[in-house]
Image 1 (tube, helix red, strand yellow):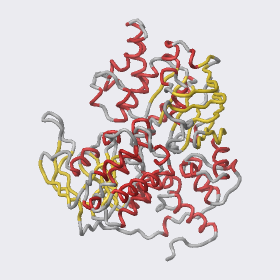
Image 2 (cartoon, rainbow, N blue to C red):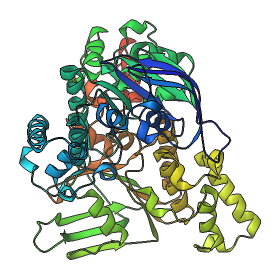
Image 3 (spheres, one colour):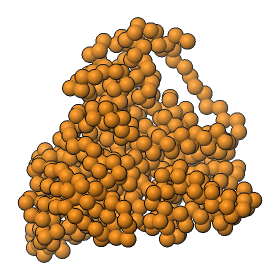
Image 4 (cartoon, one colour):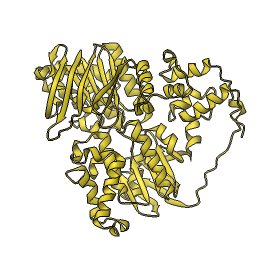
Length: 555
């Protein structure tokens, strides 16, 4: 279906190659997974496979779709046969009504009204859109918008589906529903799927092949099990992002790759097969009381709604956040997490109730481009330190300010793209730049809305360690996130935003240990044997000790 031969590409105005001598093929009906660090060329590669999205620049090599050069495809054939869904649901919606969004592509192709109605009705039923068929598109949750994007592409009946981190902004349940729907389309209709994704937990084991990119080069083209083995052998940082079952297996020094579990189900079977004693009963249940003595943020009896006729988004919400802590707020799309973050950061005012903040603050919004004002990456950061936005910077001379910017560029890995316009960066690189920019203001309280969105697992780990450093300096970090594993590893406190209020507000370990859906794959894999394992390192330690006959609950 897709054949790429010796493909190299560099953007206009840049001497560096984003893609370097890439060769691979994807057969009809296959699910191909593209993985790599932020800025490794994944999104560029995906765009090269869609005629209307090929960017301007230096191009060599060949790409064929069903035997035809991708650049010579008829525009109508390209629009019908090659579907694309990006990571930001709002960027792809072009009409104001759900039904019109479904019909829009067919209208542009000149399909008859009767055929449009039939195809739209059929697709709405398939995707379960009927209940919100007449709604305005701006009233939909993030998960609904992304399903609508997929449905509006599928109504064109494409032969190949290109997905660019389609679940980046979805909560765990919406992510699972979206991936299940894509795999169902592949099974039911034989649609070829090429998916760029950082969150591999639900799709990795279902893929037919894995394509791994590193600095624009293809370092792996193999089945998921083979790819897991290859990445482990070369000690690639991409191994950090493999499913929990793979990481736990590799951490327990198993070398037989054929037995490597790729899914939660396979992971549970493997744990059972290695004969670990079930020690759930031996663990002493501990009641962890919430004791906040020095709040940096206090929310009391807060009510909020966006307009008079709408229901309350937040209703009688009260809680405190400890100074010098990392607090994560989770919940489904549309639950009110971002609204709460805007109230705490002062962007919005509550309808009633009080929000008290003790210290200076800065907010990283969900769309990092909202912070960009300059024409290059380095100027974006320099603008903060050169205008003396905070007292500590005002005391520095010009050379020291330049050094401050330089260190930030190196730490985020953005020194390699310092001359590039912020809008020309990958989604992950934009996230890094926005985070670096707000940190240069040196706030006491940092609000982060989906900070790991678009980031590769390697930089996610760096970001987490960075947040721990800030916490140790006395900074208070508040995160809104759908990345449950990141929160499990780095958050001190977690709360679930539900029905306008905060539920299960407790320490991170207790929070994830007690959940079924808003929890980690490690917890799902290990729950039959150890009911207090929520991260891979805990699972690896306890499995190894159990196999050695050591009582893991002895202190």
